[in-house]
Image (cartoon, rainbow, N blue to C red):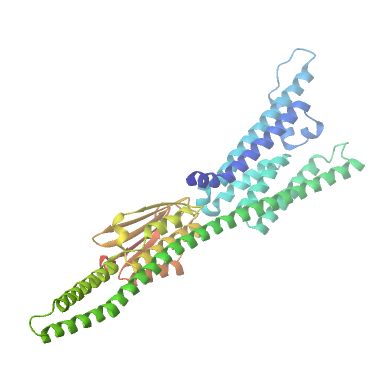
Length: 419
């Protein structure tokens, strides 16, 4: 169920943008088909293109109905051109906001250019979809500047097309300009609302990841605290109770040697009980020292389950359960840093994390499907992972893979796993 919601969340932008395009385009087609073409429609670039096509490819008509047939032909051509425009726009919108396009970095913004050009010829509904995409893909001020620029160009084109119209004079011109201004304002408001929603969504993802890290760290810390407390109790038993029992056994042995023959039965039983109790204390201390209480798999599962994006696929060998506290902490921090890198830098959709044990030691491999960028240098996070591995006698390798993806491999020696 969690994977379903993660996948739905990834495709939320595609569903919203493509759905809005088809909804607005279909509504526009239905309105035009019901009311017919107006003179203002024919003055738009789409209308003039439909008229040119009708003149180049006239429809056959009986004598006396040529004008009626021409008007119907223009109407059908206008609907066909509008449908083609909407379809191409929906395809470009899908290419622009689909999750795979995010892996190409900023190159997916190039799809916005033909989209804007398709929306400029008099179809402001499609430009509204462009405003939504800009809010999803660009920072606030860059996206707002693009929205205002495209609307000013659209208004200028519309004014030029309507300049010779008799209906575009006097009060009607002022009303038309008022509506154009309100349209620009509406696009700006839509951009702002979508931008706030997108920022809230990113903040929710960040909060979910931080909450998962907190829960996982709390679980790991609780195990480490319990393990440290068990070790303290074992040391106290050995250093305090064990030493006192050893001293008691020595005094009882001396008492047995100094006693008159025959040795009293009570004294012999006390010496044997002291020896048995000392053996049991030593057995308890050895057992407490050998018990492994660090549940690394549970901590990592808690961490990975709370990451909304990218999707984390975790596999861990059961043989890795005997990792020492130092190794468990190093592996946990390495997985945490690998996921953090994938979230902030790689735009990956999936990251696979494998933790295995071999003769060489414990190995953690993290591999994402991001776009890859060989030009980036190693940051503090990767440097910290490398230093943490070297302190435990291990090694770490990281780098971009071809054609895409980033891989991290960290190995800790088996000797560190033994107490």
